Amino acid sequence: MSRRGWLLFAAMAVVWGVPYLLIKVAVGQLTPPSLVFIRTAIGALVLVPVAFARGGVRPLLPHWRVVAVYTAIEIGLPWLLLSDAERKLSSSLAGLLVATVPLIGAVLALLTGAADRMRTRQVLGLVLGFCGVAALVGLDLTRGDLAAAGELAVVCVCYAVGPVIISRRLAGIDSVLVVAASLALAALAYAPAGILQRPATVPSASVIAAVAALGVVCTALAFVLFFALIAEAGPVRATLITYFNPAVALLLGVLLLHEPFTVGAGLGLVLILGGSFLATRRHTVPATAIPAPAAVQG
Image 1: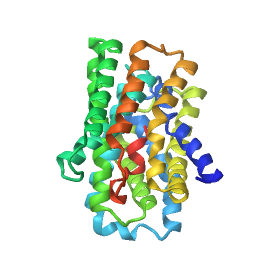
Image 2 (image 1 turned 135 degrees about the vertical axis):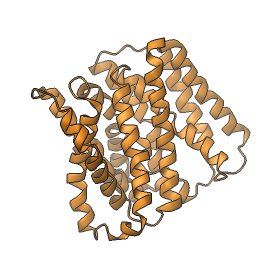
Image 3 (image 1 turned 90 degrees about the horizontal axis):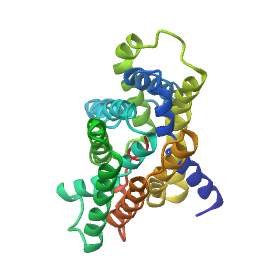
């Protein structure tokens, strides 16, 4: 991989490991609907002009129903649930639990016939990964946290299903157009609740900065960088950032938010990432099997 490719890879490993920290800061003063509305609106304001510069959204019109479903599954529902879950759970724990997306994606691929029969290595990977989840749940969660953990489970399933929609129903369409349209649709859908639930007072500077970074850096810019990384390094290498994002989320939560680094977190990180690597590793990976960008970010 070229020097430019390595720089893009490093940038993406950080950019999509940061959202959990920023969400944790933002939900201290914003409701989840307001946060999702502001984040998607900012992202749409940045990417929609880019989409029109690349030819407009006309190619999406025949597929508007599929785009609407994709928006709900990949952005609308998971971003709301993730924001709500982080009102109770630490950002580092949320990042680790969302790291199970590749594991769930591997199971879905097997169930839907998109993947061949699993080899022993891949089965071992699934077992290790879900043992990591068990370690997190058993060692780091209390009974009061289970509802939030359930929300994150739905988030992970949504993130795993989204790429299936892209590969089967929206293949061949410019991903920038899909993302721009999805952000715009989500912003419109959340506008009423987001505006009604806006805070009575102006949020603190840290919350404003967190939301701005979420919308501009971790949403709009991140997608552009990811597409550039795919062009530079190929889709298989590009998706390897999935294995670095949770470690970044854990490190930032511990260092900046003073979240505890527990035995469960350390054990869960090793088992989940190791299991994901084994379960999703292929000798050859079809282009349609590569996760869509939104599937690997918070």
